[in-house]
Picture (cartoon, rainbow, N blue to C red):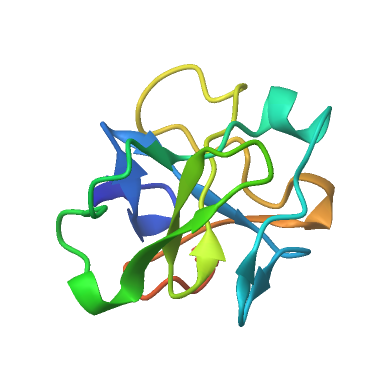
Length: 113
């Protein structure tokens, strides 16, 4: 978790993570494929049980992507980073195309304050 312009935001090594509103969370499924992944790399795990510090472990999970990698989920939503975030704490991916949201520790989108 880190404090950003949007509030307390889930991060990975300080980098804001996002969810794609077109994805599914019940069941968890990622629709971001091919060119989408160039801008939105998935937050992956090596297969170990994923952990997000400051987040209820019961909300953290994983899904296997079509390429065989394992993507971390929060409240069922697959998580991603955004390539245009230049430094930790940036939130430039917020609301890109009206489809991407930074997330709070409950997995819900944050709303700019």
